[in-house]
Length: 164
Image (cartoon, rainbow, N blue to C red; front, side, top):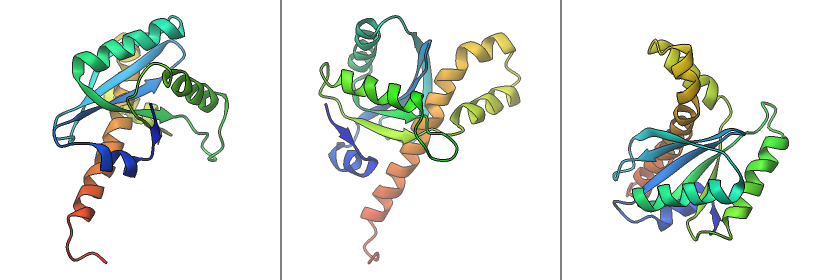
């Protein structure tokens, strides 16, 4: 397993390979998947956290079932850009996954993804109880969609014969 930049991931992905988005929480892991064209992120059911070995196996089972080519995992930076305890926990999770899979991970700044997900669910008039169970996967979708938009931009700039 390797930690890549989004630019490095763009160079390694073959056409038609889907990627997954992860929002690592203390109680759940929010999941989302891209379509094969890597244009849209779709929320998937969360993984309820237990202990690392169980969480890792559930994630690997999901990856095998969905034919995941790589993961984009939210990096919960503080608003001032500093790294707090949740960033350290996310990096430790990825380091531990290194022992279990060759699939690459990309860290993606997730500041305000949960706020955006909450706002979207409110606009959709989702009840408080349903929001609580969907928020992590919705946040994972916001994280993944940001990365997919960046991949799309990179693909357009690579194909632009007029760029300097």
